[in-house]
Image 1 (cartoon, rainbow, N blue to C red):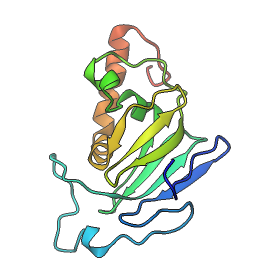
Image 2: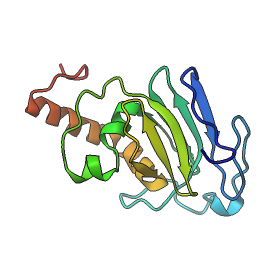
Image 3: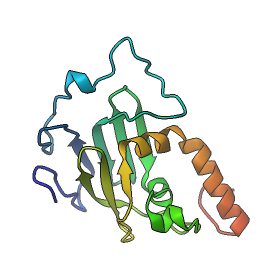
Length: 167
């Protein structure tokens, strides 16, 4: 664990991590995001399909509902289910082999660790922890969640797996 970044305890209902650039982030402490990192009024607030890096200003883990809420500096907020983040992990063992990730409905996030000032590593309750989620990757996962989730459910259906979201 890096200094100033809290581990997530299993009894935490919500953990708020304020993302800092150049200063330590502490649990429950608001961190000022430098003006140079913010979107100005003259810049577009809609993300094009090719996503430039937009940094999060707040990350909240809701362990009871198994969701990671991320607020980005452009004002966009995504609530990403832990299962979705797990099955779309950017790790080589998940994305590289193309193997369908199954039975992840009850997975949760146990710990979040920062990777420099560009990403986080998520530690899942099923032991998976090799995915490094860049800010860009998290934004794209949020932006494309409806399409990605529909694709995932279709692949489960085609492979004959059951899921609570399949009717």
